[in-house]
Length: 87
Image (cartoon, rainbow, N blue to C red):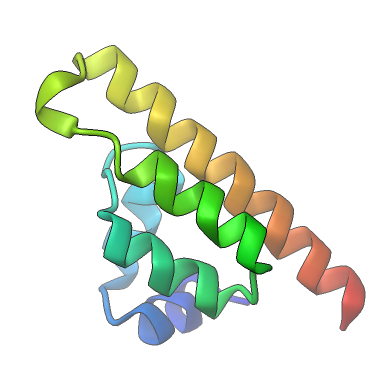
């Protein structure tokens, strides 16, 4: 799926999706739910992603925020690869 298609499904801009992919933007739990739905995540994967996104950002250092986003991105990449294999 292209970044443009993912952005359309999530209801965000393609540049936002790109920033998330590069760990430059931290999606909210709601945005992560939409990303997970767009990528056909399992309920377990969605739960893990939402849990990561639900971390209180105000209490995280900038470095920790990057770690959270990277974990979200890694999970999304794994799901996207799994979806590609199944199609």
